Length: 148
Image (tube, rainbow, N blue to C red; front, side):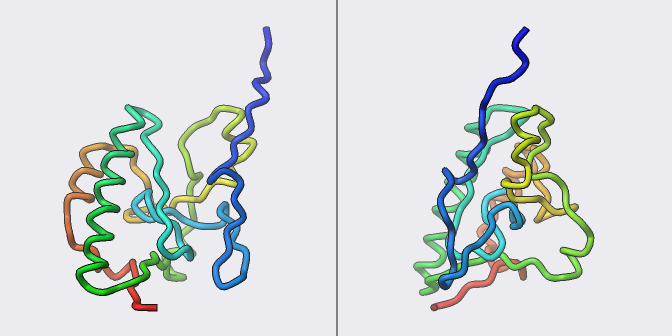
């Protein structure tokens, strides 16, 4: 029996991410609705479901991002970023993925975290996401838009 796969996760392909010349640790960020990351303007994180077809969530995400970008163009905004307030951050966090495979657990510190409740928690539920992503209400008090 061979128990080691040797698989190494490399979120976002190992790209060094910087904002205003300051490196951002992806593993210390939180996911907003499972598709944007805190402190990273105009950055979209496309993942799928860990309990269903991966492409179901990827399709919902890509459609929502396209509508968000159209909204930004119409409102003449150049930047969008989700901002987590300190009260929400203090409530704690959950692992970025609800998987317990060794190759995932070994690299969990590299994967963005999720909060304990919506919109920071990823529920792995197509119907909840379909409802959440169907709205064109982008200004929800969490994402901040700016003209730069």
